[in-house]
Image 1 (spheres, rainbow, N blue to C red):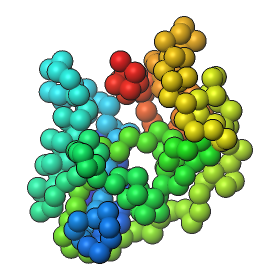
Image 2 (cartoon, rainbow, N blue to C red; image 1 turned 90 degrees about the horizontal axis):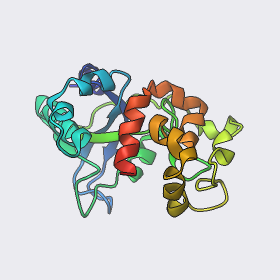
Image 3 (spheres, rainbow, N blue to C red; image 1 turned 90 degrees about the vertical axis):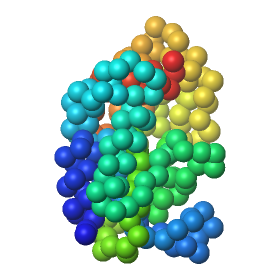
Length: 217
């Protein structure tokens, strides 16, 4: 059993292995030990998902339901367990796990940034394996934001996301209700899209629109 084998299986399911880490039973926010593999939407997610029953049945929360079925099957195939960001309260510490993996960093606008998909992060769950597996080295030794011109810091039309202020949720939602906010609703948050690394997510506009509809019904 290896992280690479799980990565290959996840890719075939439309998922991206976004990071991996060893959990310690002594850590205050962790209740078990082993190897945790963080999974998000990959470049093949959208065609895979739109052919799935969860997308076609018209019921609420299609991506969450798809994630639980697919990641649950992966966990079973690798004799592991699974965790999901939506499970709670209490909620699993996905942000802490992401940062500990060495694949995620704090961006200038407060959101996490990933070394491959930039600000277009959509973590769907994680597989936990009891064994302490060998982990691949993170591709970056420091944050990609350290050498970036940081267009994200001035991209939000209403300053809801910036380098100096906390996320202004009310301003963001109010803007999305205006005609000028239609582009964010149909193509995804402009701040997320402008990150140079976000192109690595290969995310179609229709997928971003579905995420935005869940964020701002």
